[in-house]
Length: 460
Image (cartoon, rainbow, N blue to C red; front, side, top):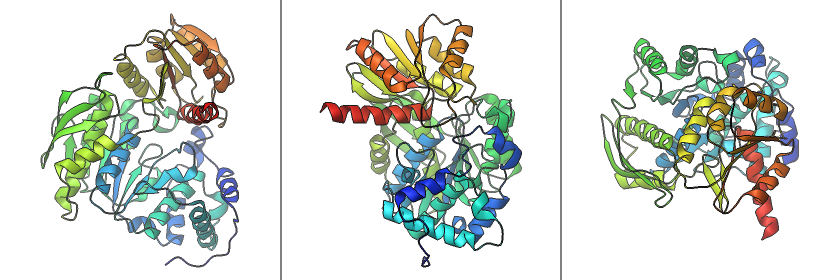
């Protein structure tokens, strides 16, 4: 039962103001977090004030550099086929804050958001510690998700790690199965320069005796995850050895569907279908299916047929993951914001039959920008560097242009500080058989997705 609390925040806008005035490492450079806030003590105290909601919910927990968000989406979609109530926590959001914490795919209402945040304020402010004023944006967000899921009586929740793993505040959960997706260089000022260091931080979500799916892509990263699993006595399935994928058909323009089979030590799932494109998404779907295989083995209440799993996978929609939002010209939105993501994007785009290839790109200044731009620079004919406008982490377009020059790309490079204007320029020059791709940052893709939706509404 939730307690009655005084309404400190009256409107949805009050809630937004309260949240976004917090220290927010989605909007500031993460190295600040390394020095001051990458610890879990305060999060434990916050959750204790809320009645420890994180201990009441069994969690499927996913970390990684690339693919963790998609894996979480697949896992939650599959679990919903059981008829149970399934929570999903991901970050960042695209358009509305409530997208981060859904139950069976549904966001809470603005009224529920106001009530939930007021309850949080009332209960946390009662602490003798100075928790309310010092709590970060992500700590509050994660705590709200757990509180919301308890209020909604979810049976399971799927949680995506925010940053790293070992000291991410989602890591206070009690998981029933974990997964580590592909690992690459990202957030190096926080997690370390070497792949082995980054993998060790990600593997920090592995709990003693709790099964882990090891989908790390490089030999070095996979071995680190393997060693942590051994140290913690955690049953481990490795993608590619314990988990086998057989691809029968691969995504093409003429047939936009992949068909594949996943074999785990416990189950075989035949003729799965995937409508979102990219070979990496087959790996993500197989990782999610393998987590569900572990859960079905451990919990007799989780019963799923092959058809139910196939329906869930094929019906999964992954916004801004190589999302096709226009056909003539083809416009694709993608959230690639690190080297492995950019490489996966280019591998998939090479399967398209298009003529001239245009890129609108922006990056966060704390990212490994050259590693993002390198694979993109070798594929596109023209690249317009810009910046996203709703987040101060954006790198200056002039800095991106300088990095591109150092990469000795043969692409034509243009600069435009206003992404909407830059996109309009590309749409005006692109022919019906050309490609416009928007990538380099989650924040650019989100802003342009909203802009294109408004543009279509104005033209209709």
